[in-house]
Length: 145
Image 1 (cartoon, helix red, strand yellow):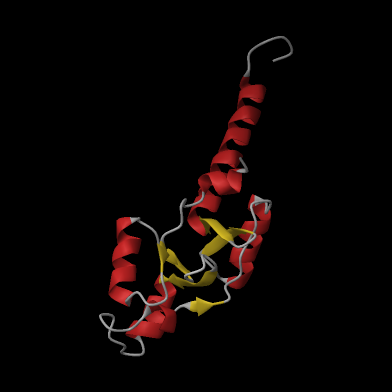
Image 2 (cartoon, one colour):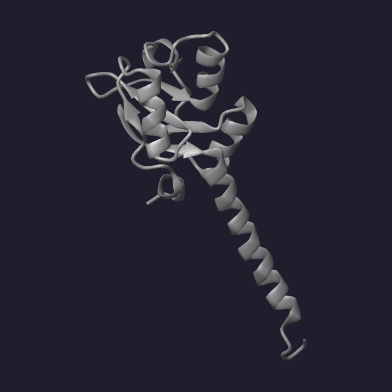
């Protein structure tokens, strides 16, 4: 399995466009994630609802989260990535566009949600391992050491 898909939030939190903001936020809290995939009845991605959408399209506009449908506050046609997208490509997309979440799509199926936090942690752990390997090499007390 590709590392990006392996570290992503799987399965992605899913809600229908008719779901209320409150119900969507409860699902996000339950799943400990900052975004939900908003799914059409045919299983295709309608949009994405994020913490940023909550702030800018609900709270800042004084919408009632108990009655507002998530379909009215979501990001429509979000940028998506495929399972073949590399960590570096995903990170570049997120950093360049100021995104924290990217749905991972295979055809029309939502496989998971990549997050900038998980990608950065993976990259940091990867760099840490490499640094420890270099330090071990130079501090080894053997022939030529």
